Length: 87
Image 1: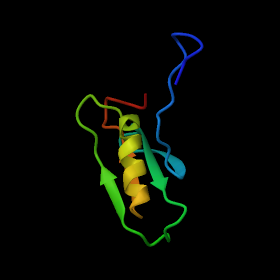
Image 2: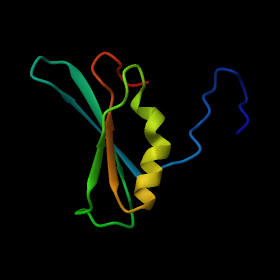
Image 3: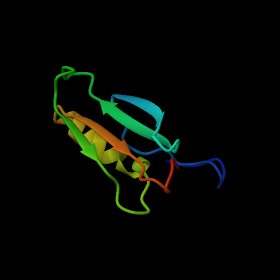
Image 4: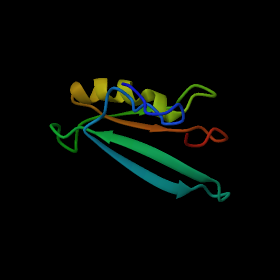
């Protein structure tokens, strides 16, 4: 996909059906964010695959993987590890 400027981000090529972002704080008041990629064609009772990214890798890098699992009928949840934060 062509960008209009070098500072404009390129959107990922694959998008999950629905993305819900849940923000919360742990007991020590550290902010966290969980992204839930839900399929529109699977029931709410479908299994959820929980992904913990590799050190130094943001959760946004797993969008294509989330799409793949969504196509197979799974929901997919991913969060950034403490210290990485959302991109």
